Image 1: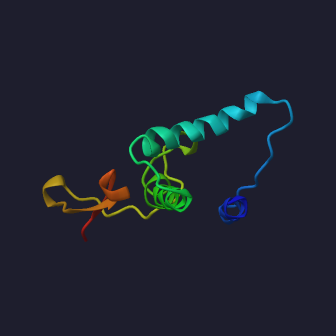
Image 2: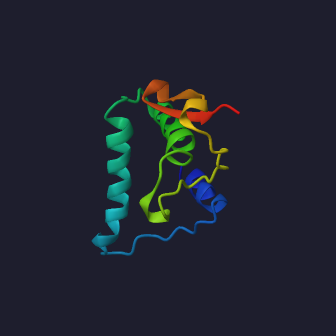
Image 3: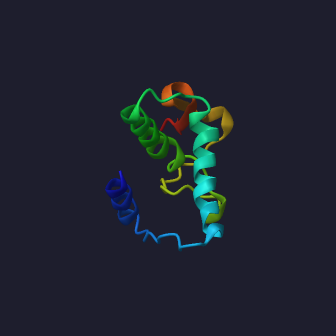
Length: 112
């Protein structure tokens, strides 16, 4: 698990830094991450085992959190920047809905 996480960070050009010894203020970042996962995922779906938990986390991060959920710390953008669709009027717009995590979340894309 740790190697997979470190590989993921390296692929995003993020260098990990260990929490300093006796520096509890740094734990806030970890606590926020755990809180987000609990509120947005684990309060709605109960993992049936370790493999199921890994699959849920992978789907949550790759199909919802990074490509669709905006982040205030990076200028209200998503970590995975996707091309902007061509602007259309609402009456001329058709959307396709894709379920994420069995329908807990949905992602929407314009039809060309």
